[in-house]
Image (cartoon, rainbow, N blue to C red; front, side, top):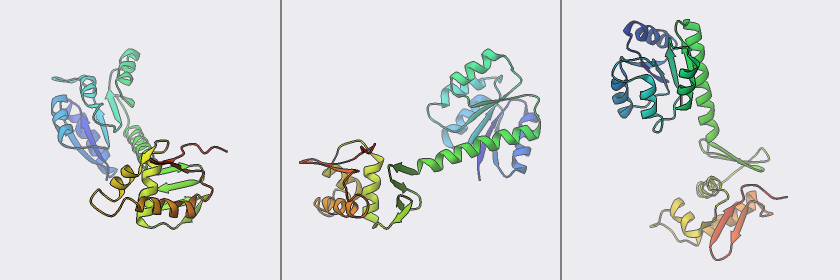
Amino acid sequence: MNKILIVDDEKDIADLISDVLTDEGYTTVVKNDGEEALKELENNSFDLILSDIMMPKMSGTELLSKVREHIDCPIVFVTAKTNLVDKLVGFEIGADDYITKPFTAEELVARVKAHIRRTNRRTKDTNIITIGEIRINKDSFEVYKNDELVELSTREFEVLLYLMTNAGLALSKEQIFDSVWGSNYGEIGTVAVHIKCLRKKLDSEEKYIKTIWGFGYKFIKVVEE
């Protein structure tokens, strides 16, 4: 269930927004000034923030400037300010959208759903890495080559994930070993064994996994034809 922080010094408006979004299945937390919102954000995470701009103690733009470096959820200003300069300043410091008061419940819900959907899609996409013919899904522990599922052992998957996550970088055998097995387990020679298995299953022509003699391996970021 998505969690939304509502920040507005006009309690009636904040409560109205909360009621509308709660009816849509969202969990909401309401704060009536920027300072209280800042304290809330220091201790809890949210999927979206809806904030007024003109508030006592701390404005919405000041709140945004303080938290944007630490959070990446969408921040939408809900405000009566329609001045273009104010909007440009907000976008410059990291606002994602504006909803102008007065607004309809339908518009509010549509905007919120759009931002939540976009965030969920982006999060899902970051869990899938595709390079050339090979696609790895971090969540499902599945690997595909040319859209055909390739069965890997857990260790083979972990080695491949480490290589593809760091595609383009030269990785020493020690780096791979420490990341996948941990420095106190197994022997470093097992890295070469698993690389051999990965090549047999996924990369028989060695287009992707390159050996760096005397050092380690590199997963080629862009496969050269």
